[in-house]
Every structure is written in structure tokens, then in C-alpha cells.
Length: 261
Image (cartoon, rainbow, N blue to C red; front, side):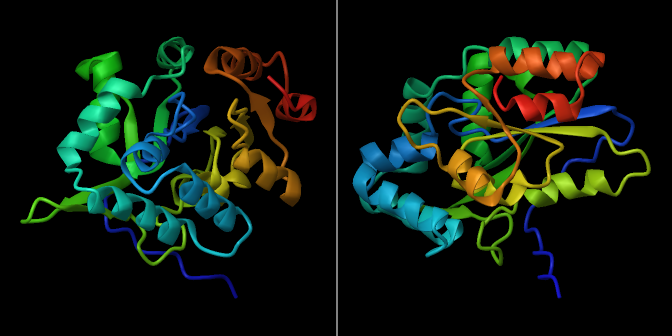
């Protein structure tokens, strides 16, 4: 008997019913060069060592991502950081993957929707995306993420999209509605870490980002679980693979067999 589908506390954007291809991507550490929540935890919260121990505990199945992530963010609040102050720190320190703007522009020109599927908090993602792309361009990208609750005393906490799920945000639920369409599109999914484990096996073509810091948790998970994936370093590399599939030059099976962008 399968587990019940967790109820969402937040709305979803409409499913793109008439597209041949759809791109869904994690935000932190995938579209960005550094995970913003890891950055806040390492520098404003309880530090990298405890954060990394929590990541590995999730990867090994000893705790849930939801609970580990909540503890990370609570450590930032406990150190007196307001949500606005955190957002300002992120705007100063978090950069986008150098190839993402060209990747997004090509997708737009090719009528391929780009949807961000994140376990982070939507207000932070909106702010960072608008800061880099500009408000008009940023508004064309759907964001499916968690949210934030600001309390009367100025403290804040994450508002999980799926609080009953161990993921907090079960990213598979952004993918599975496409599978039920009469003519489902081919789905590209991009990720890097433990928050992407729920989505990994449901993508048609899964891209896993290679991390210079050695925190290649999604790659380790996919290897352990036998999930075919493509390792990529940046969106410029990934674009070449996506273009080859969209043009018909290569098949899904061919690019997955290569295993590397």
C-alpha cells in the first residue's frame, strides 16, 4: 500500500499541458553556485560541521530532510538574524550559475517552460532571481517552493509546502502531474542534494550537478539507488545536451548512457 499523498499548504502553478519539453530545476546549489540555506547556516547559524552532519544523516536515512532543515534554519533565528537581514546577506553573497541566463533564454525562445522546484523559501528565491535577471524576466519563471512565516516578535520560521512529508516539500509532486497527461512532455530535472531525492527517480532525464566542495549527495544517492543521471558542472554544459535531445540529434537513452554533459 502506497503512502498517502501529502497535502500542500501552498498553491501550485498550472501544469503546462501542451508542451513537448519542460525543465524543472532545484534552486540552491543548482541554479546558484552555492546553496543559500547552507550559506546562512554555515555563517549565521550553527556552522558547517553540524550542518554537514545533518545532510549525511538525511542521506543515510537516519533523519528526515524536513527535520534537519528546520533545525538548520532555527539555528539562524536563535543567533538573532531577522528574515530581512538574511535576505540582504544572500543578495550580497549568492551568485547564479554562469550559464543559467543563456540556458533560460534559449528555453524561452524554444517554448520550453523553466520551473524552479525548491526546498528553500520563495521570498528569498524571488529576491535573488529578480536581482540578477530583473523583475520582468524573473516573473516568467514559475517557482514551486516553501514559504516563510514572520512572527509578531520579528522571529521567523519556514512554512513547509508539505509539512506531513519527511521532505517538507516533496518535489515528486511537481513532476508526477505531468506523467498523467494524455501526451506528457519529456521532463528534464536538475538537482544537486538531499532535497532532490524525492524527485530523482521521476524525471525523464536527470541532471546532477558536480560540486567542487565534495558535497555530491544527490550523485551518491543516485549511484546507490541505480538511478540513471547525467553529471554536469554548469548550465552551459547542460544546454548542449538539452539542445541535442530537443533537436532529435540524440535520444533520452543515448544521453543517459553517456552519463556526463
